[in-house]
Structures are given as C-alpha cells and as structure tokens.
Image (cartoon, rainbow, N blue to C red):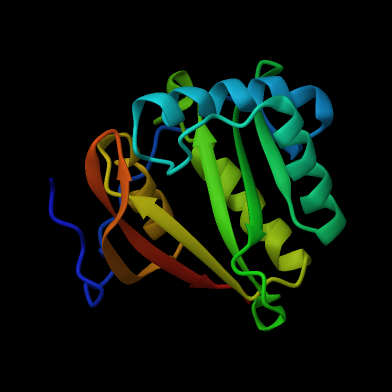
Length: 189
C-alpha cells in the first residue's frame, strides 16, 4: 500500500496540469435521462475497486432519488458531456445530517475511463465549486480512498486548493483488504 499523506503535509507548490478537455466538452445540470449513464460510470468502480465503499452499485431508481434529494436541497448534480455523450459526473451532498453542518458538503466526482486525464475532471470541479458557492456552501470536504484507481483524485483536489485535513487509517474493508481514506477540505469564498 503506498504511503498516505501526512495530515500536516503542505500542498505541493508544483502542480501538474491535465491535458485540455476536448473543445466539445460541456458541463450542465444532470437530468433524469442521464442517470443510466451515471450508474454505468460508477458500476465498475464499485465492483472492481475500493475507490467507493459502496458494495453494490446503485440502480437508476437510487440515482433518481439522489437527484431529487440534491435538487430539493439546492445542491448541484452535474454531468460532463463530450460530443453529446455523458462521460463524467459530480455532485455535492450533505457532509453530515446535523443542522450545524448545513454549510458543509462532500464532493463526489467520477469519470468514465476514456475521459480521465483529459481535463474533464477539472471542468467538473470548477463548475461544482462555483455551484456550491452559489448555493451558500462554505466548506467542501473530499474523502479519497487509498486505491490505485483514485490516483488522480488527490492531485485534482490539490489543484483546486483542497488541503489535507487528516487520514483515517483502515476505516473500510473492501475486496478483502483494509482501506484508508484521506480527508481534504476547501473553504469557499
């Protein structure tokens, strides 16, 4: 298992820049018709990695409920399209259910494998943070699992000003192994 960052580790000063997203890339609010593709994007992460601690992939009905819930809360659920096809999604969900956490969210971003390393994640993150700010969010938390499939998540978040807030060691067990998570946090203006 690769070492996790220390909670006191400073953000790197040298940042890698992803390849520019294709010119035909757009980010927009998710709609019900996007949800089968959203489900299909997440499913291999659920079944083949520990990136998510979900042990069963949510079906379209579960995604529909999430879309309705986030919309009712005024929180963003976005998709990225390349040439009209959905290749990734991002949303912000409540960090914890208690009222005192009402200005704090957890971000979630997933990309289809073909969209990785092409700047699509950066476009989604930009749009997500802007939408969170408009929604009155003050703090955004990211929870990144220690899994090779999540290798791009830490650099992505750091490029957008997230700082390591802590490491939770061996908090999950998936596919027969213990998995740690790194918590990152960003304050919005």
